[in-house]
Every structure is written in structure tokens, then in C-alpha cells.
Amino acid sequence: MPTVDPPTDVWGTGPDDVWFTLRGGGLLHLGLLDADGDGIPDADDNCPDIGNPGQEDFDVDGIGDACDPDDDNDGVDDSADVCAFTVIPDPVIPTKRLGVNRWTMVDGDDMFDTTARDGNGPMRTYSIAETGGCNAEQIATAMDLGNGHWKYGVSIGAMDEWAAQVGTP
Image (cartoon, rainbow, N blue to C red; front, side):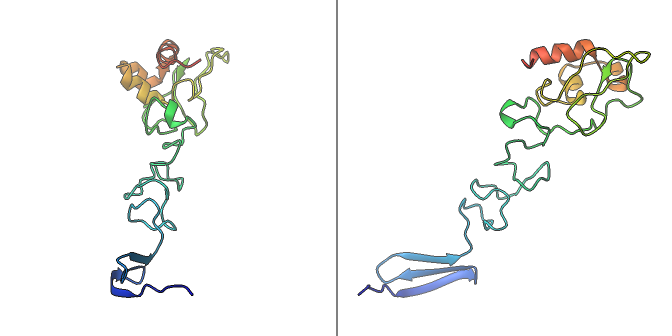
């Protein structure tokens, strides 16, 4: 026959958090499962295996930043992402118009956009992966580029230099 270890004391904060002190000295907790101990029940936790009590989710994809492999949802894994919290499309550049053979992210894809000279393209493309997960604003800031880069997009020379600096193909 099994032995019963009856409770000697009961306390808690509500029906989802009840503790029992057992006669044999043990504790028994009845409540919602919180595997990571961050105070958020697993059913509501956007990262149930890693503590993240603030439930931060920068890219609003339902996966908490603490366990999201791509916090900013730019398509570049955080382990290879040079620029955290990239916003696509670029929020600032260009502020006037996109110049010829100048680069920025105009739409939501992972490719930088440019204006071709008289219908002839620069024969060069840049992806968000090639820039280490950085948008044009982050590149212009990091390289301390002048006003023209902010107004008309980052130059092809600066884009090549940045890609070389971050070690992308």
C-alpha cells in the first residue's frame, strides 16, 4: 500500500498558485507551469524555456527576443547580425530621393534598391546578408558618411567597403 504524506500547511496567491507543506517536510506546488521561472506561465510565455519576464519581442513575431534566432526579422541570424534591431524598409534614407547607383532598402524584401543610370543598372546587387544585417541608415551612421548619403542613398563605393569590413561575400 502506498504511503500518504498529508499536508500540514497550505498557502498561495490564488487558485493557480497553491503550496502545501507535507508532514514529511516536502513541498508540493500546484499551479500553472512556468518552466523557465520568469513568472509568466508557459501557456502565455513567448519564450517558455528561457527567462524573459518582460516578454520583449522587437519584431512582433510571437517569439521572445531571448530565444528568437533573428530578433529583428531581417533574415540574418543574430549570431551573424552586425546590426541589432534593423528596420526594413529603411526608416530615414533616402530623405529626398534615391540617387543613381545609390543604395537603400525601399521595400520589405532582403535586397537593397537603387536607381539605374539611363535604364542601365550598376551590374551590382546587395542583400541584407551581404551587409551583415545592416540597413543603409545603420551603414551611414557606422561609417560616419556625409549628408549626400543620407539624402540620396549609400554610394556603391561605401556599400562595397562596408561589405568588406563586415566580412561578407
